Length: 66
Image (cartoon, rainbow, N blue to C red; front, side, top):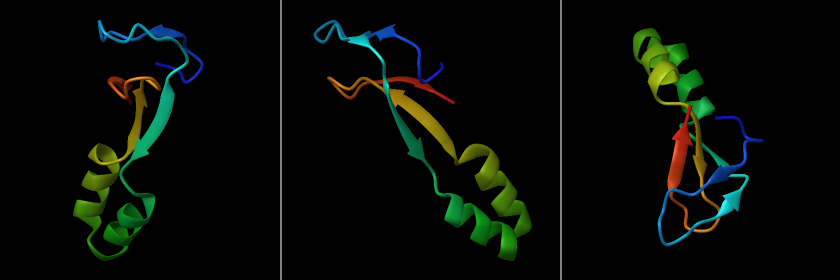
């Protein structure tokens, strides 16, 4: 899902139509520290622990994740 994508919220009580909010999760700082001191856990954290999620601005339901 692109941040410019217009979506319809899947929540039956919401019905929002528009652009989703983009929220990041994970920490780049934590990933860098792990990679400096513990290479394997740092790489695993970087692969699986960072990214963005798309949420409905009206009801905060998660509608996508990258």
